[in-house]
Length: 119
Image 1: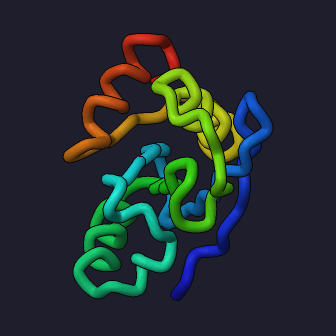
Image 2: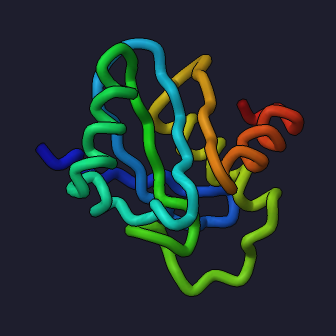
């Protein structure tokens, strides 16, 4: 089953593609850049990964700015802009407290988001 793609609007107006799967406590997940295509849910290994994460909670996944179904042709890829994207997705879909998960190159962005108060 393909998740329904939704969009959150970042502070600078950038449209960020996101989707949810599962139910329970929200976990916002920003995939590594090489996983930044929403269509990657169809890759069996990644589909199983998403399903495992969503088996006990609400998985909120989004395409980083400039990738996947998110808005492209942007100039600002700063940490501040990426934290604003995370905030927009969380405000739209988490609606309150959430866990934040990042791995590979996304890990430092997740850590910086927590340090700046977004996570």
